[in-house]
Length: 421
Image 1 (cartoon, rainbow, N blue to C red):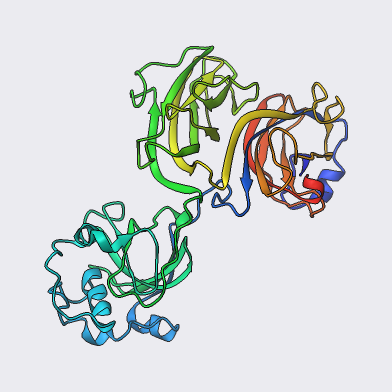
Image 2 (image 1 turned 60 degrees about the vertical axis):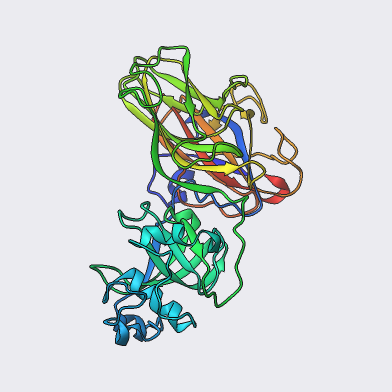
């Protein structure tokens, strides 16, 4: 992995950065907080769109190659005694009848779409198949939703067709990482084999506040004193299982710090790491993504060096033994004291190559990327940092921005390149 430091410039104009004053410099600190094995479901860590609409409307969809299987001509017929017209349950009932089931409402079925999964407990699981019914509970709407699975691209990527009460017919693509994955799949008359869900995949969570010291959520209603910590209960809340969780991604905010300082995050019950998850200035509000292992009690410990209010929102989590393998934060680079590189500030436009395989608990094989907390300390001017695989072209997009004389920390996903760097 390579890191480059740039003063402020127009993004995408490396020539500007190369001609900047070389005397400008900063100290770099890098800590490995986790490693990503193989293909990872964590994207960014930013989120994907909830879904991709492929077409809307009977005729436009048909013209684009997305048919309605004849429902347009049969929408005013009640199938399985469902309400006619634009209606998700009538549409999927029609598709099931077309696949060979009788137009007789199952005795176990009642109510709105949210009841479909509980109505067929033996036929409902988390594995999609062509011809199965994608089912959402109130996570989609107050009355739930159902759609017909047209294609299974993978266990975490499907294409569905649907009709919507008060809306229109459409096809859309839904991914596990998008945040609106079905609650389950109902198998009544499948037209293809099921594809088992990969239980090791990163799990994107519905946004949920786990901690807010300003309102008393997850902790007493009080600012966290300087030099102390607050614990965040992760497991058993907001859809996170009570057991089998290894790592969690939190969106952490420090509001109104009494002084400039920093925050660290680690599994509760373990030794506090020396690396920072966030640096903040006095009086403002700073937000960053924090990836941490979860303690045996299901908690994450957040330590603050200055008195401040803290909040934490759930973003996602990884199961034990999953593709995201957590570890204790370990410093692998520090230009201030010569860890991982000679002791010297990084000049403007300068780069560092950081080999990571075999270091800080990172295996020598089977690793596609690592997650790093990258900190810039006391820059001589404002600018940004970029990370990218060794041997690959430098991307134009910045990853961690900083201001002169301050401190900035950012969580970055770094793909590994030549020589595991």
